Image (cartoon, rainbow, N blue to C red; front, side):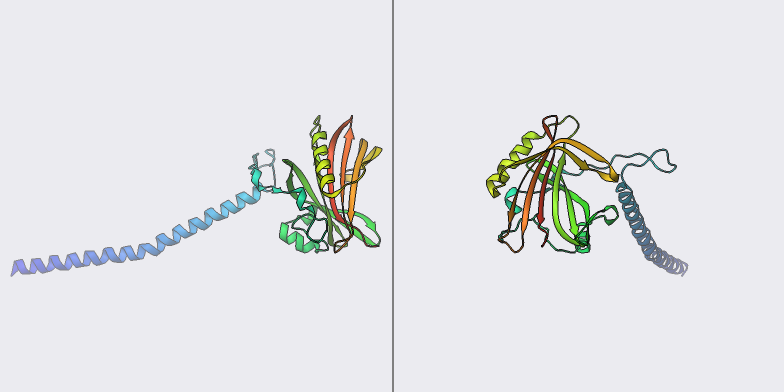
Length: 252
């Protein structure tokens, strides 16, 4: 009898022990899961904040709480590669692929993430104001050009791809290659040249060039009158700035 009671007590004790472990495991799972999810969200938030900080550029180590860092370089294949053959569509219009004339500024801004706070307001033309802003960069003949958009009366009216040479750099060969290909494709016509050119910069500053070479072609057979203007700016006999404008002509 004593042995039977002992066995029954042991059996009850084992059942209570197993039940207690199961309850503890069940109670522990939601808590562990919440901790894991929360930590993931915290890590994600930290990552978002870190990425946002990086977009502001180089931080000043003299400011408390900030430190200097080097932004991650943009991969080469992230640039939009532009082919000169694509500057004219099937309707005969000259335009940058992916951009459509008369598209509203707010639509292009939302699509390409333009920073409207740094747009430059230009002079008034026929009662309308023009604004320009840099959208990004494009690769053309293995060279990286800045892409500047122009909006007239709040609508897209053209683009300027421009490349500024580094100090002491001569980009005449690139200019000549571009001129030859554009002339072969679209017939740029005779090259014009103006000496002693003043080029406007930001904040009312100016830059002086020895000469400005340019050529252009216009197309009126498409849906609208469009054109290409190709320019080179010279200093000491060398091309130091190249511009390729693709635009819609202002209606008369």
